[in-house]
Amino acid sequence: MKTAQQITPLNAERPGAEKQMPGEVVNLAVKPVRRPHRISHTLRQLLERIIPVLAGLGLLGVVWQLAALHSQGFPGPVTTLEAAKTLFADPFYNNGPNDQGIGWNVLASLERVAVGFSLAALVGIPAGFLLGRFQFLSRMFNPVIALLRPVSPLAWLPIGLLLFQRAEPASSWTIFICAIWPMIINTAEGVRRVPQTYLNVARVLRLSEWTIMRRILFPAVLPAVMTGVRLSMGIAWLVIVAAEMLTGGLGIGFWIWNEWNNLNVENILIAILIIGAVGLLLEQALLLIARRFTWDSQEDK
Image 1 (cartoon, rainbow, N blue to C red):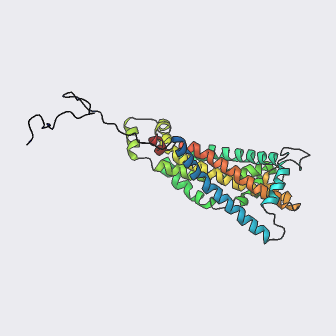
Image 2 (image 1 turned 30 degrees about the vertical axis):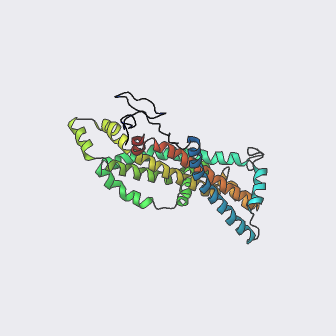
């Protein structure tokens, strides 16, 4: 039988235990949770974007090489790369009107596209606002647009040659007449989709038509306008190559046709890749601009 001195109370201090004061909060040691490193996370996201792109380009190279092996006279990627080194060694040489570097030809095509596209924007966007705002104008011009819009771009080139008597403005005319339709249609559709409540408030406030256009319609329709601009730019860059093949002179389209007459298939393939790269850069530039005017992207910010 144990004596009183031999019985240890439950709340007695144990050897090695820290003395705890009444009401004192005990801090428990918690192991920190390791979060993935920010650099490794960014690197993983970068690889997730780059690897599919490299896989797609690799597949394109394999198909290209197979086509070269089974087609007589069709150059492969290696042969085209060697030709590209020679071509880009001096892309801005000038040996006369019909013998200039590919850099000058691309700049000439971009200049024609800029002229025709700018004229189309100056006419098409205001016209789209008017057609979307006034029902009478919409009913008046919609049949004309439906009739002319499906016409092939090259069908307008002889009309341009007849009107201007020169190849240079005829190419810009072709760009203008083909790039104007997406701007008109998208702008008009954007104006029609503006909530009627906004217009009712404008009537109550007795705002002028110019104020309605500037303060209500334009901010609301801007995303639709940018969509039309992107579509028009893609059409303009597509059309200019075919137009220059027929009109001649300085330009990437005429350069391709001239290289075909000289049987330089490698240079034709290089020009195709350049056309695709320039079109991609134009598309990405317009996408960056369009995202600044998209309400969804602004809400995310």
